Image (cartoon, rainbow, N blue to C red; front, side, top):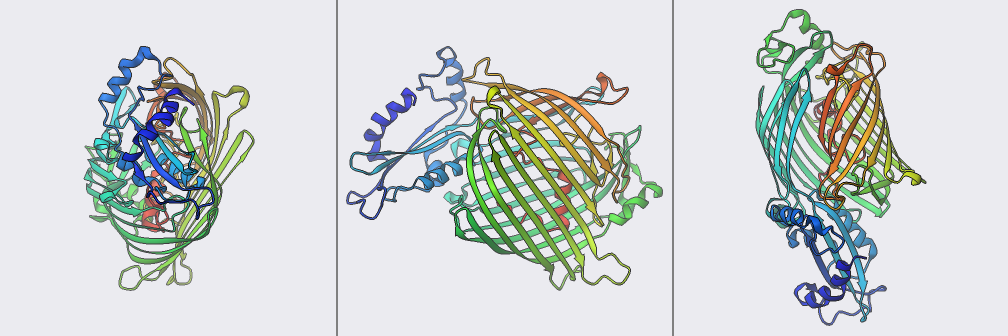
Length: 595
């Protein structure tokens, strides 16, 4: 225990108890086996706790400068998340749940919630937090015949200490240049409701996305709800593999709306989930095949009309949808949580879910829309376990729909999508600064009727190849990565580490337009990782990736810049093309509640 904390416990708590939430004077422990919570004290620190004697005094200017440029998280924001109040019976499980809820907030880097027994048999609960650096400038760069600008995000993720997010972005997403603004809050009007929305322009038109959600309150929450809306104009970018980069751009307009309510029953660690959702989906292609365009190279500002020979392969995936769907949501959750350090953050703490969870969504379309006679379903499975120094986690997702009015000789199943991933973390005790990460994943689509195509290259694939290389309909990937924590130069301020990695993968045509069999491709790489402040959970990463291919030279080196790990349990950078396909044709993310 540090001197700072000792001072806090011996002096700050008794002196300030009257100013904190406190139990009524006549509270007794008669009804509580382990005693009553009499005081909840919140000790919320800025980026650096300058009172901590363990900090390197030579860098005191850095600490003060960082704190002066940051607004500390407000105490009331933290209090809204914790599940313990003065007068409650003392329950260590509620303290653990409160700690996990606070650690789920991106703007906090460190959280510690614990209790101190008092001479009168009551408890003082201490909530000790430290802020993450919340102003972010994420510049996307690539090496592609020189340094290439791919976009920028500028945001503040803890505006005036309230936990609200404001973001401005310009993203060169190939065919879809996207620029706009976003706003999010985890405590809408002082409640536990989360609000998130963004809007702006794309190369194909405009977009607007909005979600409102009441997530489950940790493992003790008994109900959750969400509502979502989206309207996206974009070009679906079909890649044509070859010596010269080519693209076929199909205009799409995706509209969607959903409302879902889910409840839980059972004991913590053995919960059954059930609920219902209604979802509306409309997919159109404004202008039809005549509006599709052809781009040679990467000059998306200078497209040409599409040659009929190139139009033929995409006709099969131009089905339009107009469907109102009613779905039943069922699940089983047998999980528990452990806190681990240094998995997807250099020295930051991370909550890892162990056990098993399965979720099923089943439904059908309702009358009154063009697609009023189809059934659809979604299956999601998660499992994780620890075996000594090894942590294994796997996840699987499958979606599809069936035409109930299909005639003889007509394929009834449509838009079947599936992906699976196995992750392994090995932290050998003999080399505590190393974390070896393994990934094996597969993804694919079958009987596709809406736009779909995968690629093997890119930041989420074989990183030594450009994201336009090797299109197809089915893909497997393997990655081995050694993440190393250096422990220098200033571990109290900035945590620095490195990594080396090997990617191996292959793509097959499937039924995707312009699909190829890539054969097995591989790449090696190395990079630097950093985290600010020390112990923070946000990782900033710069990698160089080299394709292992005959004739490859320095000109083929790829630069990969990311904020947050692209690979791991904490990563939300899943395959974007697969996610888009599911939002249109499957049950979408109705089980997903933000936070």
